[in-house]
Length: 219
Image (cartoon, rainbow, N blue to C red; front, side, top):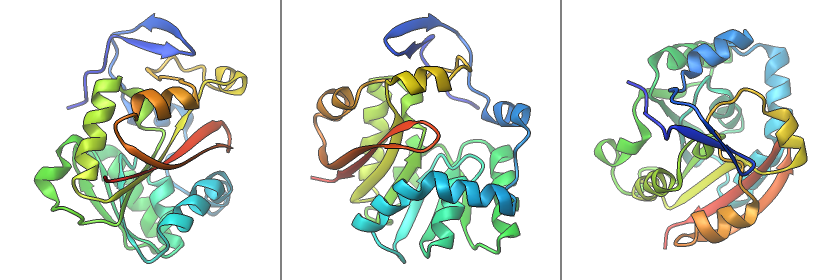
């Protein structure tokens, strides 16, 4: 079952009504790049360089990481290859099958679980993980659900390190899929969406898009 999102998305301050549910498997299937190859892995390391550097600064390997909403497994495989002990969850078993195949191709022992990340507390105890990570996930939800997701994640890990795309000229050209996606400014994220949380670090980096990397710590 897929989440029912709000019936609009906010693209740089403009709302477009769209009562769709996001089917990420179909989305990536249309792109045709489902399983990692040596070439795409190199590209992923390049894309994740800034994120992995920040992750290592705050939580060095061999820390226990939970990748929440792992999708095709791109980031969790990169982290595993860097020495982290990774558990990865996703709500879509089709995506997990592909992620498992990619991990096997690179001999990575990642634990994959089919799980809605809003239900983490039902499956993991407090501080089961050293950090929870995700990239390009939270911007697909309205503020209320973003905060709910963060509350649940901080219940099982003292740190969350994640990235979200921000409102920029580059991103307005980069995103053209009309998927529900909130492109907010860094200030809106840190001073509004995350105002009740302890933001210990944040930085805008350029991978293929302009992303805000945020480090949250439990209070």
